[in-house]
Amino acid sequence: MFGTRKLGRTTAQRKAMLRQLTTDLLEKGRIETTVTRAKEVQPVAEKMITLGKENTLASYRRALSFITKEDVANKLFKEIAPSYADRNGGYTRVTRIGPRRGDAAEMAVIELVK
Image (cartoon, rainbow, N blue to C red; front, side, top):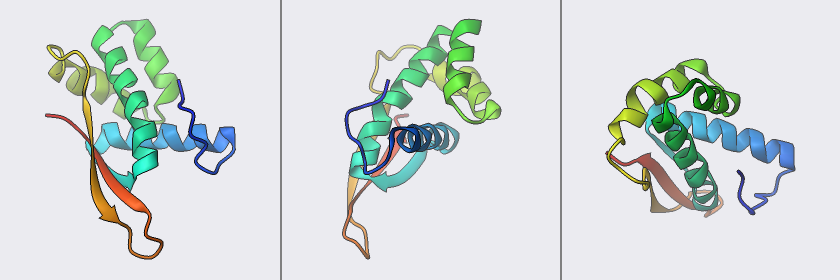
């Protein structure tokens, strides 16, 4: 389920960071992060939305095992996934916004497509 970029972290830290970023993206609809993190979060978030489109108890439990907040999982299955019922993928968009002040890391916005 996870990509190949290590992001300078151990496996457990990387999984925890991706879980939290995915949860925040589904909760707020838009987050600002580095480009490499956004590229890693994108396929994970799309898989969560695909699970939400299935709308079965098994898919809800799979999503809940990854998403860190139960109310975000409910929002995924009740609001987010039904809005993408007629769409076959491409639920998120990564837009570069330039370098971060301080360390010049390339920043990006990842957001859910309307």
